[in-house]
Image (cartoon, rainbow, N blue to C red; front, side):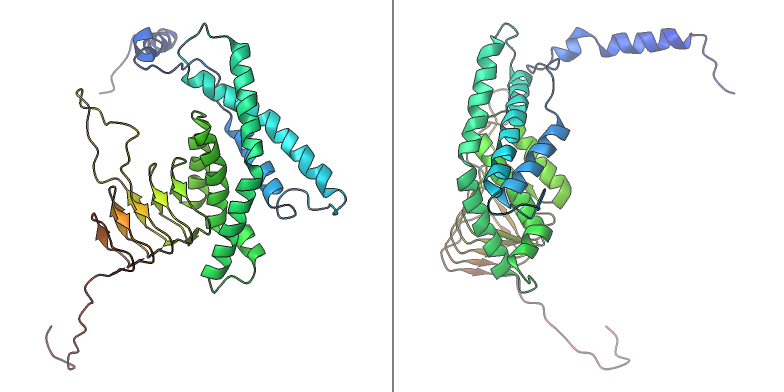
Length: 308
């Protein structure tokens, strides 16, 4: 038998709204939920415009000449500066619990921080150029560096990561994580903006790669799909909550190759020039020049009709 309700729909809705808006729900967090949130659309515009700055001719309007390139890049950077200043300010407001704070001071700080990111663009461009070279040299299927820029998820993810990492170092809240999660959604590559990654970095195929917040990766490192550079465990404070900010992810030295499905956990060190085979599990330091592989499978032949 179908249950009947005597309540008026309007009354039910009002009761639900009142319950959802109870102060205790919002005051359970120290985050200001009523601040204007950063805009995903605007941050997408920031990254699209920056890709055109970092790889002119590959993204955005490609109808320019050597004479007009200076003006085009200048206009794009000016657009990024204004967009990013607004989004950084929203990030500050989201994290701020001091409602009496001087907004002019926050605005000036946001503009100064956005300018700090602009100053790092030549460095970001240099790092990305090495990543492009690593992708081209590291994949025999790549026909040109342009193909890696257009098509490779490694480069797409690294553009977002390298911008996000500089914002992370500038202590911008929320925005760096949004940028790397945008790339995560597009590529399946999950890099925390706090990770420190050297030049000539290449993630072949890329899908399922996870690189944790305190991970340190040297130069000329190649990583294949499904690799996890994660935390094994972390200490708890007196209230049973995880202690934040401590080093807990691997250090990968120069010239290391890590094949698909490998899992490396904890603050362990993978020595220079090592090769880590597929699907291995590592929780201890690996000396330089090591080759870590699974036990080889045994192939046994059977005569036709023989039982297994």
